[in-house]
Amino acid sequence: MADPLPAQYRRRFGTDNESRQAVWRVLVESWFSRYVDGARAVLDLGCGWGHFINAVDVPHRYALDLNTDAREHLDPGVELLVQAASEPWRVPDDSLDLVFTSNFLEHLPDRDAISATLAEAFRSLRSGGRLVCLGPNIRYAGGAYWDFFDHVVPLTDRSLAEAVELAGFEVDEAIPRFLPFTMSGRARPPAALIRMYLRMPVAWRLIGRQFLVVARKP
Image (cartoon, rainbow, N blue to C red; front, side, top):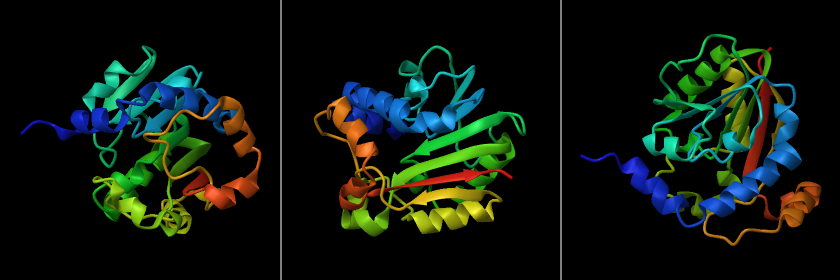
């Protein structure tokens, strides 16, 4: 049986990949760079086509995904780990400054897999290293959460914060409403509009459907 992941990614991202790349460049520059500054080693967990990690400028960049097609989209300097996230990562203990994941954990097969994945993040991060998790919040996404065939585990900012703390992390920040639910299939918003949105938390409370959880390894 053929691996369904490449076809699934192409169906979901193929028509607006260029737009997504542009949006992520603005998101990294205007928001997520605060977590990257000073980092030497960053891992993009469930990297997809590398929209985040390609926009990051650090000495050591890793991307983890089961989809072998990711190689075609990642920058040459990014090392791709093709493996399940819940299996031991091929990075040393205490070697990463940041593990970033966006719209990924809800795709794992069950809560045990999420716990195993968070345990690997904890092992791989140095003391003081950060885990940054962005994802759809079922509390606000409602039934639309299930419009994606591979969404399996329903998550909120609170349930993920609890899982992260059980893995040994200390939660620095948990924002229930951050970004809109999805950028898939939409025309690219102007960069100035994205920057304005990120500076207006009142707008997050109106249209934000994704949580942002930021935690630190003690």
